[in-house]
Image 1 (cartoon, rainbow, N blue to C red):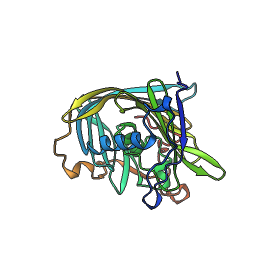
Image 2 (image 1 turned 120 degrees about the vertical axis):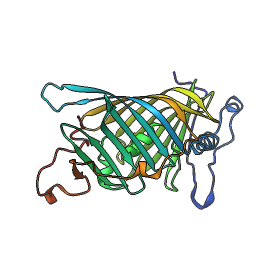
Image 3 (image 1 turned 90 degrees about the vertical axis):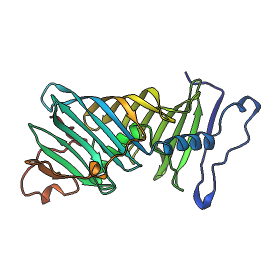
Image 4 (image 1 turned 180 degrees about the vertical axis):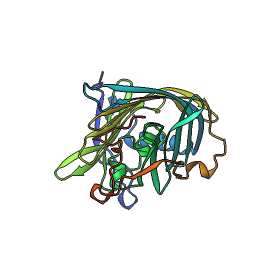
Length: 292
């Protein structure tokens, strides 16, 4: 339930080296952190996790595209690998056979599923294909809660102090409107993210992720149980459970290299549909989420 203690609306101006500013708190607000402090403490924690290795249990639930709104669920075992802010690789197996990959590096992102489809959907980082991709690896990394919140000079931010949470909303102007970019719920006791929402350029929600359980791994707290929903014309649900988390394990760079699996077809999401010589399976984007 939202507390009436404080609603702190403000602009965080980072241009020209300016830090976040706010009016002096009233006496009843004295115990509430200011937005700059919340942001700084989150970024310090996010920066403390530069690599992550973990075993993973994944549950994917997605529409089949068939009439009647039928959905399909797959339970997979695999691993999660993370390095820095722009390298992520998650894979899943069934009875020891790899059937699912999603990953990104600074140049490219991709998703691969098999055996029925055996197609790799891929594209350049930062391109239109990545933004239209319902299971964007960049959004998945944001869902893990370990990404910094860096405000551009044109961004503003709003902080709401609830009874148990700080709700921090990064905003950007779209025409005459101020639309959300990313909204994060922080536990007030620990300042760890417990929910993250991501929005497109028009303020439409693309992702809602809940971070349900934290454990201590080395010198940092890491969430090990996630529940996320990716939004497009259809919705894709993901439950992720991590075990054996290591923050000090060396991860070989080749883990994050894009390679086309033998026999798989490649669908480049940055190529216009009228440039394709033959129809490929629909990409797992807003109009057609993936399904093995």
